[in-house]
Length: 186
Image (cartoon, rainbow, N blue to C red; front, side, top):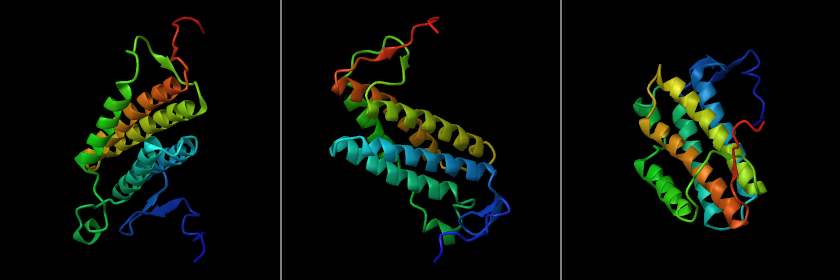
């Protein structure tokens, strides 16, 4: 099987189930943004030690493929398609919340807005956070016109929170203080 199909050369792509849409369709924008997030998480993961945090990011990447499958399916309630779609459960959201609480417990209280940066892994966590927020906005835009599983929205929202806390925690682990925003010092 060749990697190129030439079926997208005119600016269209196929959704799961066969429907053809333009690549600018809100559904394609949504799952494309989730795919971009997954790629950035791959870079972050490559900068982490082989530990619990790295394994967590690997699980998140797998969940994002589940999210992408859901978003690429215009009729997720179609019985022929539904059996192929892994759901994003509330338990996955709760896992992110548990990690937020666990990492945040090691951090000083937040006193100001934090500028992205610090050690390389933390900086990549900040990039992932901002890409996550864009993906979340694309999914919200899709949800304003089409049905989207609300657990996907909760998952992306919580993931953005986790990535922020993770960035702070990675800096703290390396002895790097938060870089606080200084208003008017631009």
